[in-house]
Length: 83
Image (tube, rainbow, N blue to C red; front, side, top):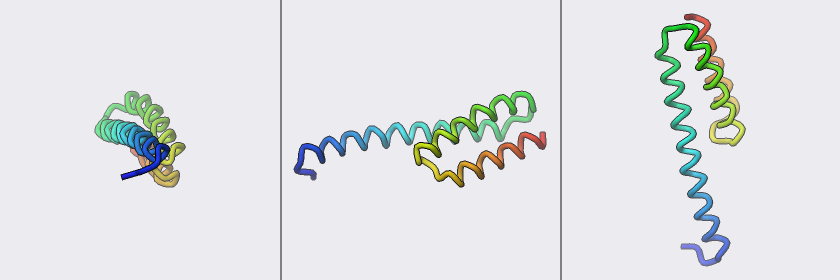
């Protein structure tokens, strides 16, 4: 266990960040799954823009790697264009 006041605060703040990051990552994964299940092109195109924004936010905050973000966006775009 930490002994310094600042270390205790750091533990508290990092736990808050961890919970928020997990929430955002899980929400994005659920949106990706929902997008992959869609068969209507108009709906998919609309949702694709939202999902791309979510993925970009995760990459910007280093929750996921920027290359993974690019791969995900590319894969989803190809899927939507194929509809």
